[in-house]
Amino acid sequence: MLTALGIDQDSLARTEPLVLRDMERVCALCNHKGQCNRDLAAGTAAAHYEAYCANAPTIDGLGSRANP
Image (cartoon, rainbow, N blue to C red; front, side):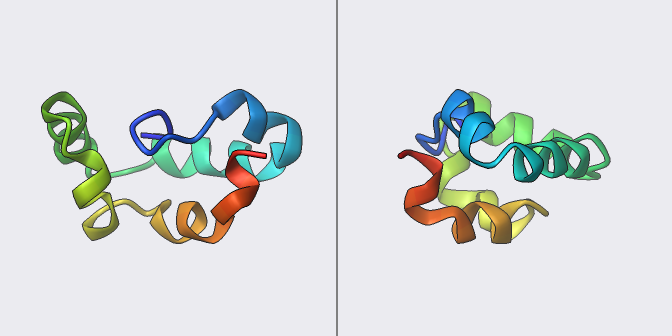
């Protein structure tokens, strides 16, 4: 998802390692993996993730910190 949203995971790991670890935990426990995988495969994840992704508030809150 991070890649689909243009977020550099390596950069995020350097600047916000605890946030990234929490996001990974949330993703691992997610009940919407099917929808997420379909959207990622279709290239529509960036347009739809906020409707189901439990990490959406965190992703949105990262703003420019996600790609320093």
